[in-house]
Image 1 (cartoon, rainbow, N blue to C red):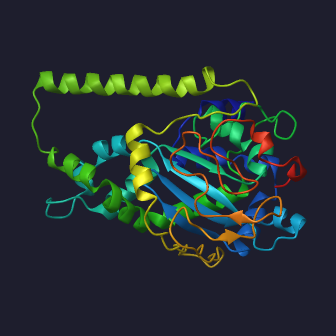
Image 2 (image 1 turned 90 degrees about the vertical axis):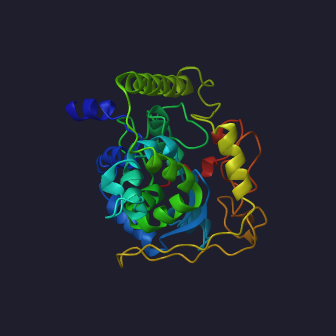
Length: 341
């Protein structure tokens, strides 16, 4: 009972908060670590796409692939960095993350801090993410990417243990190894905001200016909290799905503009032999991907270009996965895959 109370208090959206919640998954599945290692042995994790706010990984399937007889089946795991602009403004002016001369930000130092501080939304396209309650748990903590889930897992996971499926677990285990990649990501997409925050670090503020800045910050936090509460409090009826958060118009424009670039090369996980590296997804430009024989229904699958960043109603091109838009999630995740984990 005490542990359940502690878990209900943990509402952090960042990497550390999600991993603390995930630690309880072994109570539901005592063999969960072995299941994750088995997924790793099938091909591990590959980062296939980077956008200004979202990273797209592919992870090998085990259970579903064996049942459907599709050896190369992979699932999509998405991570969205929700409030990067805010944490940049907070930590880029900190001298701990500058170079020795104090003339510029050290991106490697800053990336480590931001990766653990930024709020995160995440989702996996596998059926277990829905049926064992992970999507509901993340929705309650405003950490569910794409469609929210409002039906509690009263039968399969009544105590609501964990927060991630085994594919999401593997990605989050590997994420700290991508610190160098995150530093390059910050330089590519967020250098202007970082430099602006650095340039204003030495400015002196009067008491009146400081009080005004604190008041603005307080109002912004209140607005964010209201938006977060509205996601579940005034959302669609249970079973209808719906967004927990939405991209701002500027975010949508940023991500749409960057989707026209070349597909980034898959980046391997380093630092351990127990997580083999999947081959990067092959294909041409984003949005013009080659067909892949990987789908939860056994049909042809177009991998890259699914779940586009502009989430205003456009549907996914990948058969059997989660289209973007409205509708019951159970319609996109076949009931024949229930109970897979």
